[in-house]
Image (cartoon, rainbow, N blue to C red; front, top):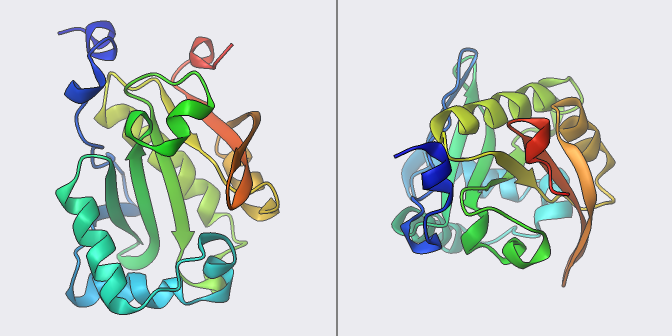
Length: 197
């Protein structure tokens, strides 16, 4: 089946988000709903620099349920990303077609989306975020040949995030409204022709 045929599949036939293909110094694995992975995600989500935009400083038990639900479903793949073997970020890779953003722009069934939380505040502002975003976008496009676009929707007030996405090759495609935020719609296309018109 060609990539064009895959793109034309019904939404129900679109596979769950793939694990991105990453090169050193980056590596990623599916986050587990217990043990050290859960400890990391839960701890990071309590951090002010993450909670300011994620608003998910939940109890450990709720995070266990959240990650477990993602792993059992086909919409979101929760990831832990390491830089040079050291835990760096919690990432959610999602299928746009199964997410609330699907009605907000002219999506394609294989579009993938990203949510990112850099774990330690001390590791922000060093250019690592933009490097990771570039690696994730490239890695997701490599992992799913039928995917032509990787999207993100950070809060319009999250200036450091907007700058990092722009530096990683994401294009601004307008703003979208959610109940809890106004988001910038950012798109990293496989080719320029894949940007929404």
